[in-house]
Length: 341
Picture 1 (cartoon, rainbow, N blue to C red):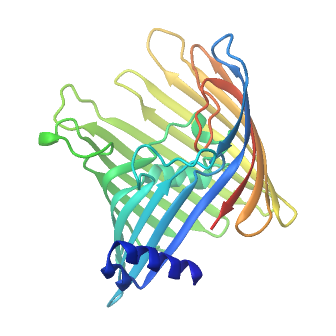
Picture 2: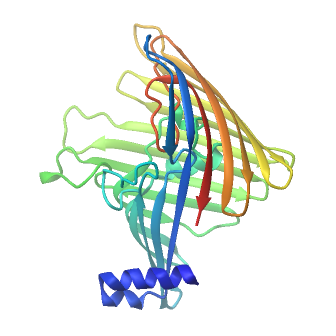
Picture 3: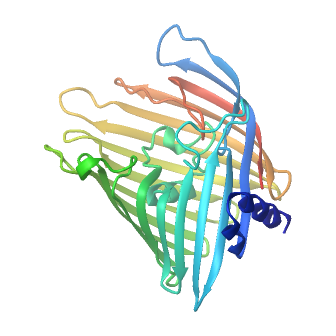
């Protein structure tokens, strides 16, 4: 209740009509810790130890609101800003660059308009034991199209556990260009089945620059699943991506989340990526990762993670985390504290 009152007061400073919102909530993440990285792909580069923010989850401040329009219809919005705790700076790519979209929902499902996570990212984040965060994140090797600008997305109601997301972006990488020349058009579809301990998900999307010649279509397929046995939740992920007209990238991951008592969990994964290229030996990378998270409360947890990448035949993957790049380092460790509100 206090969050809602604060949000209404803040919104009131912007415009009086904001008081018409029936429900406005402030939410966010504050994540801070220490990282150590070593074994750079470039010889002579020393190891690095740093105080970093946003290691397990990107730091954010968000506003989420809904209004009941009657007859089963609801309007809603999400505005989400990213920031760094270690230096107090906002993201450089825009005020609401994490997410900014408007929704209309009802018995037909939900339609969302604006900058939002891609169906691919939502799928992979739900399957990766590390939740696409810390140095153990699968996306150190797994290529993701994380957010899409100028997007219209539709999420269906659940049909006995099956939901389908369809999305189209008129330009995934920013504002539309004059004459729409070069705009990156994206089409995506992602069915997800979730019932009891089982979750199975599929994603397909394609990217193509508008009115550009030659202009091959980049196609992406992803398939993944999790199954919770109680003593452990196992996960598997497979993806294929057209990097260019002559290069394909195949990535797969297996992982597990093992509960430890009522508050802890051990996280583990192995990921492998290989580029199929002509003439030269195929560049490939593999990563194994091990981590632990411990809940101090429903909203606050401690975490630790370690990851090691092996690059072959010219590959140069490195151990980044949710907010920080790997800078060429092939070994990394995070320890930190995350609070969600």
